[in-house]
Image (cartoon, rainbow, N blue to C red; front, top):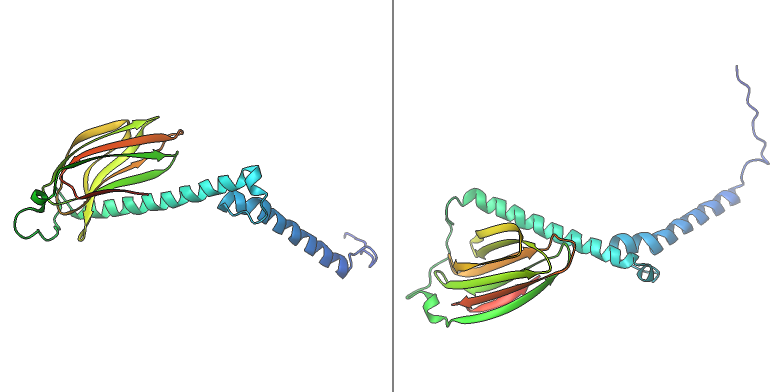
Length: 212
């Protein structure tokens, strides 16, 4: 048998002391949340301390990378879904333009666009072209290498792949539009340094723009 001595009432903390300790602990946790956790994890800096310490920038980078990862996962899911139903060539096709091919009515043009991609960042350039339009492209990377995906989309055709690759410093060739719609180059910088992608295009297309 073990005998233990019961503590006296004087040795036990009072209710006021317990409440005070609880309040101090909650205040400490709240201060830690506002000053450290929110800036470092979510890029939110309510106290203004996180920015000088570099925590806010770290949190902003984490949130940006999380958004890009979600976007890439959605893109890859769409690619897998499209590839499961499109065997050698796209089955679904947009309605053809009435009369002669629309490409014949679009004047030939040339453009040069540059993208600066931080580590982990991805971006896309789209051109609008009609079916059977031909355009030449030449893109290069300064400062490193990128992963790329050249594809197209249109109403009824969520994804049509022209080609993709990893760790490339540049590609060139001719793209023949499979249908009326957007024809795109997507790049992602998986390296540790910032890179600059330069795209040069020439052909019968009606517009070009960057998509973040």
